[in-house]
Length: 347
Image 1 (cartoon, rainbow, N blue to C red):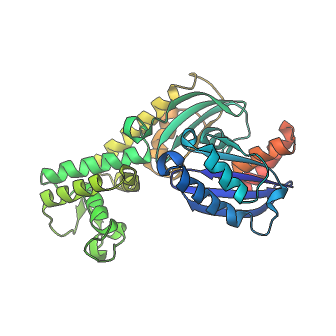
Image 2: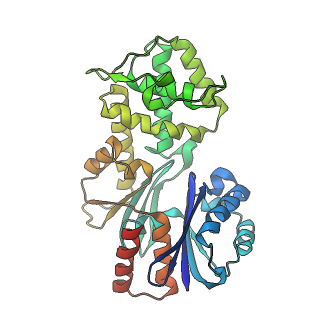
């Protein structure tokens, strides 16, 4: 008897197979399976790619239960998904849900509390008995996702293009963004992209006490601004999320534009939590998503702004497998808590 947990987001799809004792049997990873971002066909194909290594050497018919935490579940064409599921040899009916309950379970075994997710998108929810009862944001990159990775990347691009248009090209964030677009994009000039941490053509980035980048070759600011705009307009808007780490890096070095973006993002994320959480509540707050589980200025600012104890979410696939085990094996609360500690500790 096995249980299967899947954590399916916009960037990656991960599947974990456990036995009844919580021992890891198989694991698989594939590109994103969010049907709202990729369409159901691509999403289902990527989920199948994650399932294959997880089920390797195992009879899929012995999987007793499965939970799938999926971003964009409302856009899922269930008929397409069900055909993919059956083609993998799985007979159990999976519980397909949003990623909120799974993200909360990745940080705690408690049944009540709050979860804040900030990855490519951003959303917060109040959780009761493992299910969201109140939700804030999660409105997508066009209408919401305040403080998300996309939001951070877009603000970085905005700050850079405005600075470049004014002929101000020596700010660290501006230069990091310009170099990422020039060398880390499509490489239309046929040259291999260089690591943006080292600058163009491997040149070291030197940061002065004022947070500005020194030692860079001079650039035509207007030309760089046009390059950035053309790149942003010609690619998926979500690609701007890859600029988010540059904000944290520049903020850590004291860049004023980056510090302002970090402070604003943290304020927006804390406000999102406040919409679903009662003041003075002592239930757990779980932080999930790459923006909040990676140590850096944004995570630190959000923790300070929340003013309450927080827990970082662990492996979402492990949490989904734990939820599946609770249901499939009929675990009481104490047994479920023990299994949670084992599964999440080993993930």
